[in-house]
Image (cartoon, rainbow, N blue to C red; front, side, top):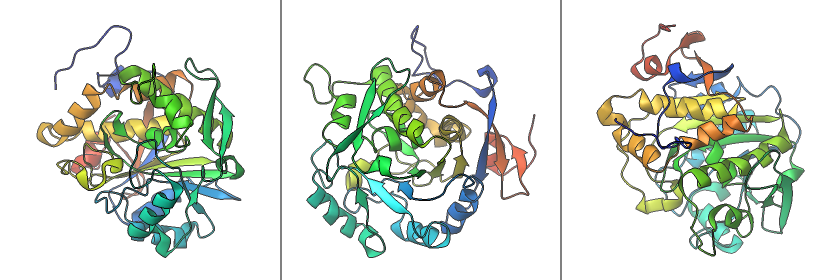
Length: 331
């Protein structure tokens, strides 16, 4: 897909792996889209997860068709994280999760209340976390109870997003941990306009919000991206999401948030033109690639990585090989 680059920004341009520089992180990959697949890949990145554990995931608008199924999460938690707590925040937009009362009802509709109690972290207030090295923020407002957890498992449905281009671990934390009235307003509002921030500025603000949270948890965080039911729409659009036209791919996991999201994007771009077109266009037109480059600039991780295929005796593979099921790594 032909793309142009605006000087000084570049968020609309996909950067091929060969053009990247710097250190490499480890990213694990499985094609096993199931509770067992999530559990197996989690076991590769859970070494620092301990004590009071929060699981950040998108529980979805009422009857949203594309979220990670609650039944999968129930089975995964029973096997790996029986004492952990799912955490969420209320939304900035009016809808099924705008107030805590509405949010609790939506949790029931989507099956989460059947097996767990979700901590809506901004239900009783907010907390401020510092943003080190940011150009937009010096601190970010998050749900009051979030800093009370010791470890964070970021379990993300990787998909598109109307404003962000794509929603990976960065979006899940940057928007999803910011509280519904203050933090999300800080990210989205500009000159009194509720949704006045877009493109590079939005990607950078989301990333700075994420940095506040992951700096708080330090090494006690892990990132899992589930590439299934990949619509160009976010799960916040619920039943109004655009149809899924991108093939299911698999799951990636890493201790490096930049590498985890970069691998998710790379796996999309490794698809054939027809299969990747919708997502590639959505990411590019919203300047979503700036999420990756700005996180790297903030020192949050690496956009270069070694991809380990846990389905094939831990072989090192390329994203292209992962998609087409070819085992050799081309170098």
